[in-house]
Image (cartoon, rainbow, N blue to C red; front, side, top):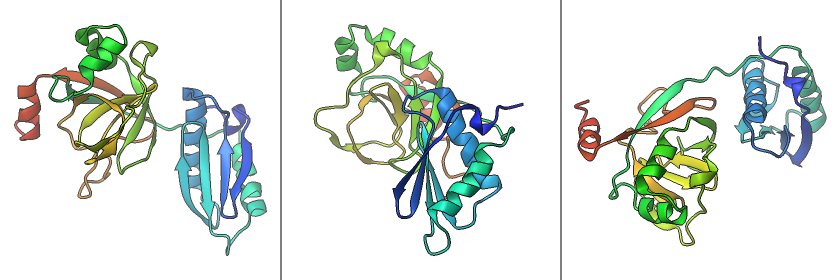
Length: 234
């Protein structure tokens, strides 16, 4: 049985005239993130009248409501009932394996990042691929999952000058986060590899490959295997 939503004290902040921010602290942790998604699940199962959207982040949930239909006070009262219930639905995540080609043409920052961290390329790949990451939340671009937590040994700053275009499937590191670009967009994360899997497809249900609460492992593959997966041969 999962713990109640009140097991970690929630702080409520009126972020705007149409939003309420529920925070479970200011430190990134799995437990704080679980609290965020337990609350999001509870609000999805039993919606509050007038609430339009829920936006989960690492340690907080932003609740947007229609100010013509409800008020901060009404949302806060309804929210308090859910926060103090003794039982809450746990977010059941999956374990997802992502094949990644770490060869240099797929990871243009691999060599420089390994040098920066005082590692060999092989050591960096091993550390990155042998860590299990949690999908904390989705954002930035459709299907882009923020994964944590990257070991200190391979944590890296964002690039000083972001690239104008990052190819879909590119796997990057920024701080103690790692993530996969789902579409061609500008980006400043350090790129260490690329996956042939589509992270987001409008014709798929669900459209995003990853969901909040999933556990992710990266599996190193060769360039040949990358191309075969991309062609649908594997």
